[in-house]
Image (cartoon, rainbow over the protein chains, first blue to last red):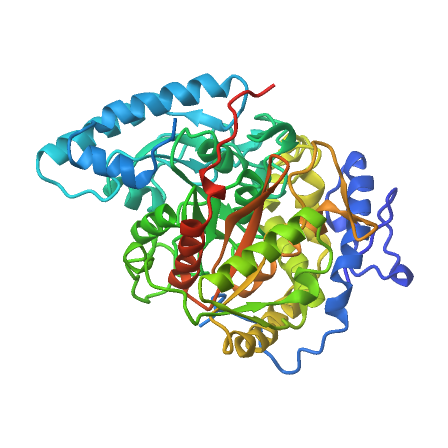
Length: 66
Length: 472
């Protein structure tokens, strides 16, 4: 669901589900581990969205309910 | 001594029993005294407040009618006040002085309210405890070893300590309702589109809301009446007419249908919270309301979509400040170590996933409309636990350790995603720690939930209890 990253490098590991080349995102070495850990946790939380059928719904553009 | 509320202060100032300047001086004195032990404020604007109070006194002498005459208030420091920095609780923006007032600040000032300053928050509003590496951790007024809740931590503390009777916060996943619940206050997240965010710094602009915290629903209603309504500077605001919320508080709740979504919202609660909320439901039935079990579908999907949206939108907004040291926009290192990964992580969420979350929003909102068709409002716990200790990462619920981000926000964030109005009202204590009841209204039906909260407060005394001022 979320682009995964290798904590220590910026390789694009598509087999692990990477959708984004992390070299495009400027991370300092110090940020790589905490961001990787956060993405791991986020992947779990976001997973139910992957299996949701949204049919032909267009994205909400007015965010208030009426 | 009972601390006067908005209604008492405004009445006393309007009838010249007190001057706005006297009220302001007292509020500043208390704020300055408490600031040494409790960092509620980031900027205390004493001179500005005194000048504004004197203007209020002059206007009243000239015959002006000011519904919030002389009522001191303060705003979360992501809401602009001309001439003062808007730090967002971050060192990155420590010198970002606003040129104009946010619309809500302008409207409250025009109604006679007196701004004391800018309140502490969880950095960038991206957190739920109120811990802040730059401006100090806001402590829970009821127990200084515990968090006040966030992100509107200073907004809750200032009211709970009696510095001012209302404050403004913002709420993207529960950031008004959660600190209100943990500090024993009423906190209202209005419907999306009801209150202007112009002049407020976004975290996630499709889910951000600005709203008041106060001791009572009656005060909240008065403040909302002043703040709400269409603002050309915020195109998300609705053109719907704004009711006089205060006038509509006294209607009976006899026959009102309150939906109780037991799945999800009542599954993993601490014993004390479960007991207090069940007792509140009984009290509401005694007041004439009927409770009806309902089910809100898609809640795991709501959490998922909320995550995809909030991280993507936050990273998008803060991207200019996320470069590595030495590069253009290389302020990233100045964000707190707890916040920087959050701001960076959204860059890994694809546009496809973000858009799926926004598409899901339409599907889920449509399904929830059917649920709300059968009830006038919902009642749930605001938080499954009372205020936790500083540094605590999990809460033990139903025999499992649950990450606090899930424990604290799973019950509130659904209504940021849907945009329904929701508030927290005090409904009990676990020891000396407050517990909150969440009421959720139909679209733009703030009057209904304020009315229920008001009737409940008329029949209970939880909101009359006060924390001590000792802060170790």
